[in-house]
Length: 253
Image 1 (tube, rainbow, N blue to C red):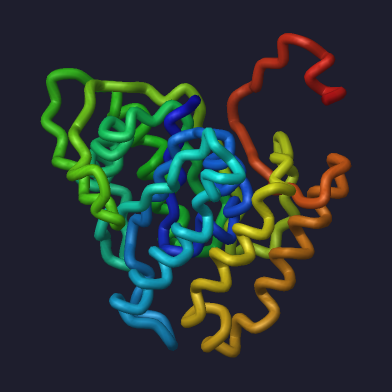
Image 2 (cartoon, rainbow, N blue to C red; image 1 turned 120 degrees about the vertical axis):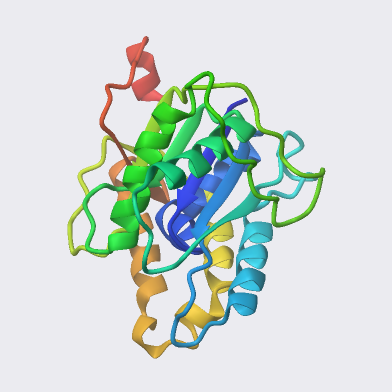
């Protein structure tokens, strides 16, 4: 099973872009960590305390029922604590993310797609891209990683240098673009968990009238991408690097 890190500029970005995929990966027994770069506040209807509670409820929604998925691992979450709306691509911030990569032993890292209208999203993706490289450096001092939001299992420990094998991009963009993904993840078994996780963000989607209808659009997009791969629900993922296929039979599964 893989160590997987999913980075979001704000709480709810990971759920919007690939929440069903996160849920499915957890069901399969992968060790998934959600890293929120900022707390997402201020927003019109939110507060830091409310947003933290919503993020924890969303995390729990993405965790699989062990009675249904015996191999499942719980989804974890941590907050890096950069300031919303003013995230900057700096060496200091790169090393903060690199410390999380090393603490988690991340083999696969997901980050927002690199074309976006939101400055925080653009900065976070640049930070993560460079942090992937920084995480493998030796003889360099790294900061201690932040605590897990669920406070289970004690504080994370800074691990040895590592270079994540894959850096993949999910779509949670503020541009009106039509994704052209490298692949579509079959997330049909995670779609209900995604819906529940998004409903947890009441301050962002129910209380904020500007976002009414957004969850319906997200759900419709998942059903559309699922239809492209013969599934009930799919989520588009992009890679800048070629993905190996060793047997064409894999395409027929």
